[in-house]
Each structure stands twice: as C-alpha cells, then as structure tokens.
Length: 335
Image (cartoon, rainbow, N blue to C red; front, side, top):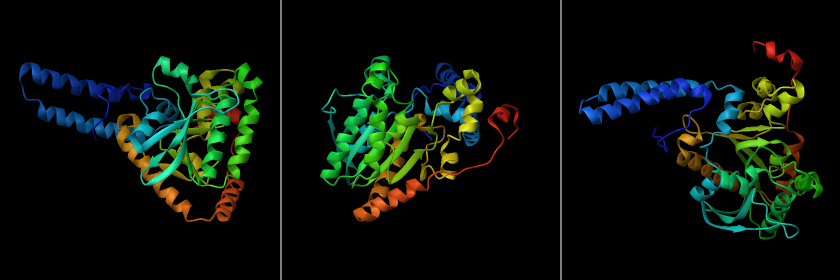
C-alpha cells in the first residue's frame, strides 16, 4: 500500500513503526549516496513495516483510536468534498445572525447522486482553525444547517452529513444565542424531514455538537473515528478530577465504531486503509463515496411515509443496556 503523504506524523503508540520508517529512509538515502544496492534489505524492512502496521492497527485501544481520529494529517470534510463531490456550490448564512464557517453546506453530486451536503470543518493550519472555530459550531451554524435541510426537502434532494467536531462551541455568545435550542430544534426537524438523510462520522463525533447534524436514516462511521457523549478528557475530569485518566474513560465510553455498531448506535463501519485515513486519503474517499451512493440508492426506493416510519422506529430502538462493574473499578480492571 502506497502512502499518500511523504512524511507521516507519528502518534505516541507508533514509535516502533516510526523507527522502521527511518531505517528504510536511511537505507534509501545511503543507497543513492554510496551507489550500493540495498534493495533486498529495503524489501525486508518494508515487509516488517507493513506487518507491524497491520498488527498495531488491528489491536488499537479506544484511546489510541481517539488519537487516530484526531491525527493532524487526517482528511477533513473539505478534503473529502474536493475528492468526491462534483459541482459543489456552497451556500452561506442562517438568515438570522451570521455565517458560521464551522459548518459547510452546499449542493453537489456524489457519484451519480445529487445531494445537499452538510459538513463540520475544523481547519488544517492555525489560520483555518481559527476561521472555522476548530469545527465547533455555534447556534447560527445549526440554524444554517436546518435552513439548508429545509431547502433540500423542498427540492427533493437527499441530505448527506459529515460529522467531525469535538463538540458545539460552549462560549458565552453561543449560549446567549441559544445553542442548546438550536441543536434540539435540529433533532426534532431531522427526525421528520421528508427526504433521505445519510450521516457519516469521519473523525471526532463529540456530544450534542455532532448530534445536531446526525439524525438520519442511516448513520455510519469511518473505521478509526469515534462518537461519544463527551470527550475522554472531559469524562475523566468529571469522574476522576484529572485528564490523565482519559484512556480509562475512553474504554468506559464505548466510543469506537466496533462498540457502537454492537450497541446499535451506528449502522455500518466504513473501512479505512491500513494505518488510517491519513495514510491514504484517496482510498478512504473512494470507500466513503461507495457507501454514500449505495445507501442513497437504497433509501430512494422507499416512499416518504415508509422512510419516516423506518427512521422513527430505528431511532426509538437505538442503544442497548449492558451490565458491567462500577466505573470507579475500571482503572484496576484487566478486561
């Protein structure tokens, strides 16, 4: 598998992988400088690298999955829009207060399917992150999203959402303008919107900030995304009064795609390339596009009444109750 980025930023648990990468790079440099043939050694190291990468990513802990979902080189919503959405026309503003750049919305074509796309955008560099408020939407963002969804309903276009946020913005201005009401209104309106809705968690799915554009007929997650009522750090600070317990909190929150599919919270897991989406964004985008097109075609076969009935029944049935040991004992658990 070819990596799309020449230099991949290593995560803490990837140090052995990074060492192999460096050995390969050093041998390739030495081969050019000295004119000696190290092809066999390089092949052996590459085989070890692939094997170690596969073994590592097949056994990620929940906390390691969170780190992958937050990887600085992980594709963002605009990256996927650029790769899979043709003729994208962005629409702006909530017609009440402002245009919240944390949520991008517009119309375009995904494969053969015309759709209204809503996406949470974090930003790549510091300037972009500030402009997009680190992907944390304010009430005007959710009201813009609702305005566009109503437009999609009017013109019989399906809605596709990309979820990638640590949460809604909790600042004073956001609270003054009614961020909780804006999210609650979206939950209500999406539950009865008379057009197909497909939601995909592509990175972080944080709390109500994610849920504000995540009520759909089908909810999917990329393999190394996470979706949770609270961040592991936030949970740890409440339960243990320290963020150092974030790994234990991540385990308790059952926030990985595998956990959430088993609990019935998400319908499908979209596979990522070996080593995560940041190692091959193009392959990830291809998998994402295939899922969206296939799902939209399935949903189009339903008439509106059946669509809404199935959506209502699916959301009423979401989630399962599992009995387990008290949270305070998790840190000493061996499971």
